[in-house]
Length: 205
Image 1 (cartoon, rainbow, N blue to C red):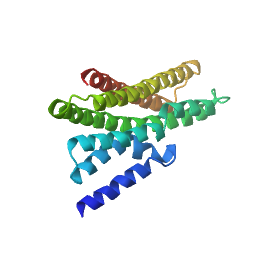
Image 2 (cartoon, helix red, strand yellow):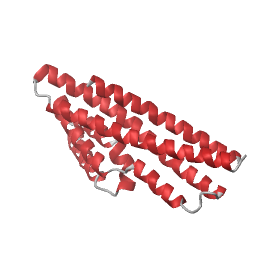
Image 3 (cartoon, rainbow, N blue to C red):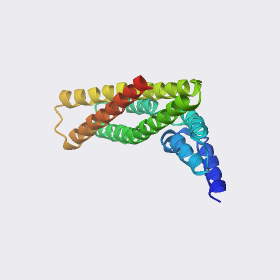
Image 4 (cartoon, rainbow, N blue to C red):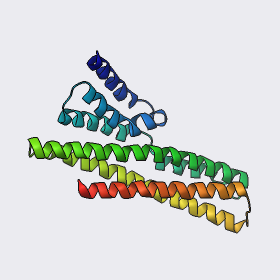
């Protein structure tokens, strides 16, 4: 019974990654690979088999899930023509902060899952085989996630610089604006911490 339910859940995870980019962001990017790995283990699969299954679902998620850095660019384009409007700036900052908060939640889970899968894959290679193809695939996933994080960091830095410039040029004393800038700074620091963790993981895999 557990095995059949687990297989059904695994199918649902893969199907989830076929949804649109916006609705699949958390399903695919954050939970897909790790959830597939755990469900596979519950169904009685070996570490090697489940690492491969989890990696496959993760690859689908990497292609289909939402590109947060691209979303930041779209939000900046929507601000065009309203750069000097405080209300427009506040709406823009809130949207960016909401986007990056969700991205950081997803990124933290990705880092944890990549760490778990890398450890399993390395253990299987050392115990059972000299084939490093799975480890090579894992390195590629880490590198792709790190590149995405770095792209988001670059976008966040530009957004934060724009907000600081607006605040200075307009001598704005809006507490709401100051609060959103603090949120932006905290989000940026969070993304940078996860990028550092990914860089360290990449060196150790």
